[in-house]
Image (cartoon, rainbow, N blue to C red; front, top):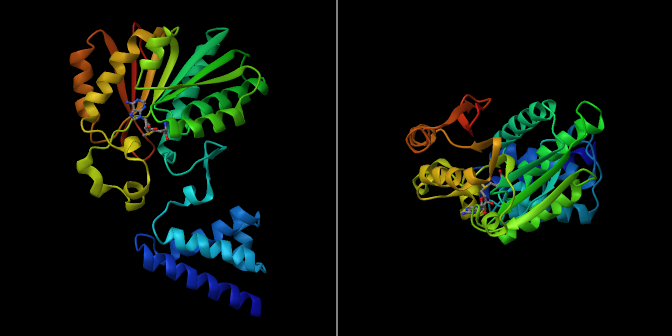
Amino acid sequence: MENNTTFNERIQELAGLIHEGFNYISYEEARRELLLWISETTGLNAIKLRVDPPELSEEQWSSLESFAVRRSMGMPFAYLLGRCHFYDLELAIGPGVLIPRPETEELVDRAVAWTEERIAESTEKLRILDLCTGSGCIGVATGHALKQKMNQRKLPKVELDIALSDESAYALEYARVNSDAYAEPGLHFSIFEGDLMAPFRKEKAPPFDLILCNPPYVHPDEIPLLAPETYLHEPAEALFHNDPPALYIQIIRECLPFLSDHGVIIMELSQFVYQVVSMLCENEFPDCTYRVEKDLSGKQRFLIFACNSHP
Ligand SMILES: C[S@@+](CC[C@H](N)C(=O)[O-])C[C@H]1O[C@@H](n2cnc3c(N)ncnc32)[C@H](O)[C@@H]1O
């Protein structure tokens, strides 16, 4: 009982420190995060922690205090932990690379579904590109999910060749670690560094069957709509672009020469740009087809684009 009181008092104190330092995190949220931190760093069950507080060593308390101090400055939880969960994977993450978002998991759902259909039509090898890859989350999760289905004999075995590309060498370090962690026979990742499709033009790369891309699509005027921990700590080059609709058109234009005959481009976008992007697609690519799909929260989120075939 005494232990419960001490534990809860110390947690309360640290939750107060976080909330007062960075009041975008409510007291309750801070408390929840402290328990999550203990659970993630000690392996103790997060629910059990609430009802049956453990005896933490002074070393563990000091690690928790150091977490609270850095969290009170708004440093994102995932950066402090050094990892995050995405589509059943645990990915390495840290300052300098975008923290993968839940809506991006829905892009992976679409990539997996499209590839499954393609495999059902029979093919021996598929080439997939994750452009603007950041941590590699989209390409790695897509490859891993498909490979798991193949290993469970739910899908015929085909070779998956997945390219991960970004202009940030820093982000690519994470993509490398994450792709190394999930590569296996039949699932091969390669890393490219450069501006959009420049690395592939230089290499005269063969076409891709599927191109996936979550580009920086926030206009700087939208900063007030972002969480402060995002605009204060996540890399600006991963978030912002001065003309997001133009960037989408540029990406499509650069990708088209590298898209196989029945290839598809799937991109993430925001509710603020989808109408302009759709209009521009109609004007710029009249012979191609595209559609915009909503995410689970009802926001217009995914652009599915194809040429010579219907997506
Ligand atoms: C929105 S983040 C997406 C990261 C990751 N794919 C995800 O979904 O979490 C955009 C990424 O695009 C990269 N990027 C921005 N401009 C680029 C460019 N011109 N060429 C290549 N990559 C670029 C950034 O470094 C960043 O990693």
